[in-house]
Length: 72
Image (tube, rainbow, N blue to C red; front, side, top):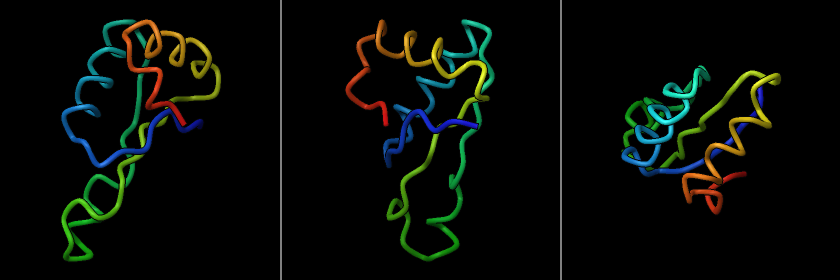
């Protein structure tokens, strides 16, 4: 798995998940609930991951959508 984005912005994560899904790329959000468990909501960034084979295409899609600046 490859990390595409690391952010505390849940709206951005939701947008990117929907964007990738619309292009047939499955993504996974890691650490979505970790901040809540730690007692400091939003303190730990969420990571958006894709499988290795989809990483290059996913990066291209995110960049074409104008969000290339958030890529890891």
